[in-house]
Image (cartoon, rainbow, N blue to C red; front, side, top):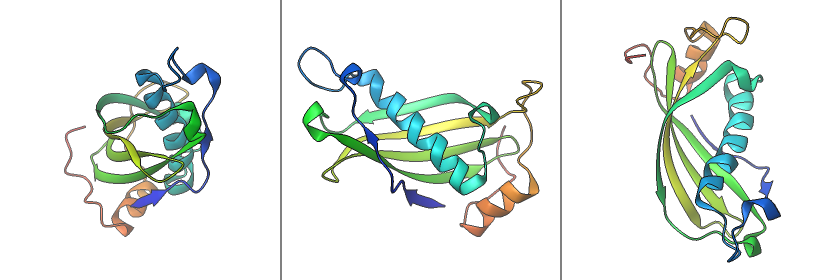
Length: 139
């Protein structure tokens, strides 16, 4: 289950530090915006309240500056547990170079109760259709 977001997120003035570089924490904000859209497209998780990030690993690969203009993301579900997904992500500058690489674990939740929930049959089928093993995870 891989994909590049065909749409992009424009870099904003607030993303930049005094030197014109994208502040390191903003990489996570940009990835979150792109991931939310990707989850909606791939798994039908249209409500951002339907999951919560519980773990993030990030490698900063290249500087990102205001001159880059925009970013896009590449995403692949690495594994699916009972209530969680582990996703590998890349943040790409407008010229295509990779600027960050992350591994994110999200737990699905019921927006009404706030409790974690199991992946639905449709979500599991979507993962399985893309070669992602399901069910054996810890969460």
